[in-house]
Length: 556
Image (cartoon, rainbow, N blue to C red; front, side):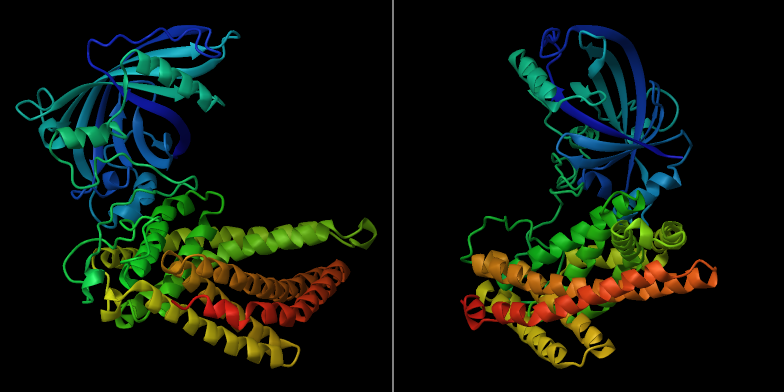
């Protein structure tokens, strides 16, 4: 069974003759206690193409020290990693390999580097004796894994590397401000920030095994997703020809602050598509670990990517993206089972909390809890089966291939503003037709379905406008914001529709159990009234959002 430890640390390097300063008296540090010396022997695993290292991920089998076992380190934010641990075994444990499947795909994980470290540990304590931080001074030796296999001294006759590294890690609920103070003291003594984000990255570079991106320092966003990626510029977009040969789609190379002049439609659309593909790949481990909001964010990324494929057909070859879109729709639906249950349960719990005790007849809370937990258990198991299955693996391979060779059309080489504005306005016209039909539909099921269709069209238009922001600037941002208001109102209405269906189901179950369905019927009536309120508010909101001047501002 794997467990997880959050690491908040800073890494440094120093020459062999550099003396570390005394750290007692820095901030709340009152004493420095020697904690002994450890001999650590670690074998790092990756694909032959170093897929994990390219994303700042490390998987190792380590013996010696206090935490011998398998360690998978996943970036969370600069200087912050989650270390997922599993007991020692001869081969990488399945619970850890599953967490890197979105990067490794079906490639074998093989030893790539061996590190032997002599570690001297000191613990910094406050006046009460509470541990604040741990300082580890490491003498590191590294060899390619091929030289570490077999009898005799590791790396005998093989190229290797040596260096001195210092790690300062917070303990407990420590303050990162302490790390800043320690860092200043170390700098004053001649200690430098580490040139690589991990020992593996440095070992790969110094033993000649690195590839582009593998040894580069890695950062990550606050939501746990990687922000450095490994994509290469897709200049093919500017050629106006379909992409041929290799080279990852490079929206990344087009920085957020890049000037609008000279941007092609391919630059803008590929950047957006790249961000969504990377989000899907990077969020999968978080979904497997059941981290908060991970399912929702991964589902959003699948929808945004599929929407981009449908909106920007002049830029991306629809014959190539349509099959991907089918699989993205399937994945979004599988992700949505658990997410929809979670949202709906929260909604009904909040509604129940607002019902006076005199109107809460029967075990309504227990009935809702049973309904929710039964669906949660099944949904979670089903989702993990999907992520482990061959269909999802095939989709991941397709997405990686898309990054390598995006299917660009001739219009990809044209100036971005005219192409992306046309795509946004085309989606708007589709939304307008659906809104007109929905507002004219008779009340009841027909209108509910029409409003649901309009909601989907609003979401697609919003996503298209968001993707166009690098080319169209503030007008696209404002257009997306206005369209989002329509989407949200229609989304709230659809939530009313789904909630009413569930309340009717709960009322029926309660009635059959002899509990009575009065309270669920009361909530049904409230949801019905809320839906009617939103239907009344929609025409006025649509009049404001659909003003001609908003569309005119998008035209270059």
